[in-house]
Amino acid sequence: MISSLAFIFLVFVHFSNAQQCSTPQTLYNCYISYLGKYGVVPDDGYLPRSEFLLTQMTTHGLPVICKDFDELTSCIGAAATYCVSFNVFYSYANGRDPQREALAYLQNHAFFEFACGNGKDLFMNNIDCLQRSFEQVPLTNRMQQCGQSSLVVNDNSCPATLEVTDCVRQQIVQACGASAGAAACGAATNIERRLDFLDAACLTEMDARCSVCQLQILTSLILLLIHRIIFS
Image (cartoon, rainbow, N blue to C red; front, side):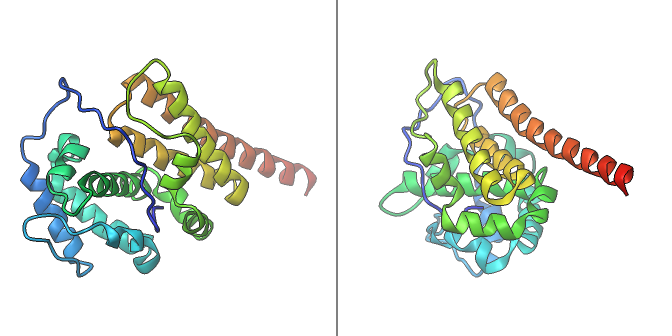
């Protein structure tokens, strides 16, 4: 959760061979409708300042947000593939620091994309502890503390980023348990995916590491069940 969002200040690299968003206005229109549900209004053709994102989860709760986020996702539709990006959010960002605003929107979107999607069960089953943990140290802060610093691509980009997501997972495992750690791992991985600076092989490895964590949880539950059956 990014309940009191702290921003990762990164050197953004635009990849000239990346696919381009052909309908950026779709993202803007859908976001204005989505934010309007919370009483947040547009700023003269720009997205509202991102301060609202700081308290969204604690104010409204994940079940409510997921319902609204699902509607946002449906509204954006196929445009989500290329239009949910730093560049598009940047084009609609306002204020003194548009990079900060764009990163806030992109990271927040990536977080809820996982928390309300593939990771919804993990989040719902651990929501109280996850919320407390991310209120103390937001997910993006944890990523920064774990070594996230730059989007500049080099030979160490993948190993360094794998260490970041592993580190986040371990922190939450210690605070909330293994399944919550898997939730945090998945959310951090989806943020890395949406930041769009790693290759597909690296992202696949990240997904696998989070999946291994979830497999370990399932294995532990099965062993516990067997133990209870044998000794009951």
